[in-house]
Length: 301
Image (cartoon, rainbow, N blue to C red; front, side, top):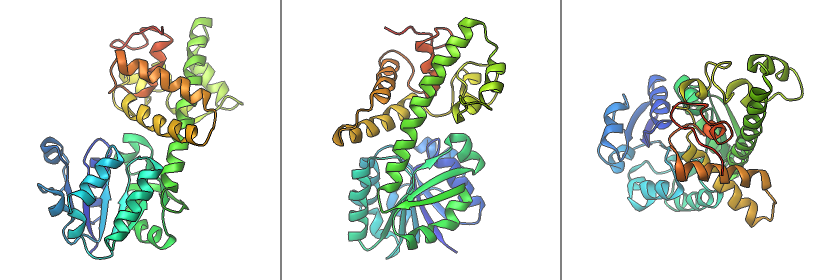
């Protein structure tokens, strides 16, 4: 049986680990937070070294590249994994961090793919995530059975770091799409347009988008959207701000004028300065329409 060493039991990591364990993988997990370990509902240990001991596959799901490096390399934990073990980093980190990690992991005689995910907490719970995998084709094939236990789609997108590049670009598009939808929804509200009718028409017209159908930022017409839960749960402002920052750093380095993404980043920074960064990032609509949700009404300045 394939032995899995798992590090990271946050909002995404915990349900992913549960799905992997439910699929029959021999999994042992670690998280810095005792509360996360106790509530994860998977076997846990008290150190990354113990979690990775004799692991055939190592999975990390952590906030930043520095956290992944600290957990695997700086702690010495990777040395306790099997020689030739495959590291699957599902975190969303900078492309440069991913390529540096690939070098550090292979220098220790292990293999590496970056495999960031799309689908949010709902996808993590349901096991319907999409994985964007950068690395060698052979490593992608080795990872497939585990990825299939946690998601419904996986794409081999290129060499190490390519997964992070695709994820970063995807989230850049998501953020700018959502900002456009928020502006349209507020305009519809002020014009007296019924939101459900707008969705029905736009979803079969040129205004169609994933955010229109799944993430409508005004509560009511899409019961599964974060707006229906006062923006609790979902993909937080803090995480989107981080991911958008990675995209903007790359755009600046490569001299791409990412004006739309910069404006969304500015608005997310305003929420960061004045509001609740744990709310879903679609709460950005409150900068346009104060009172859209009961606990985060703001006006743009």
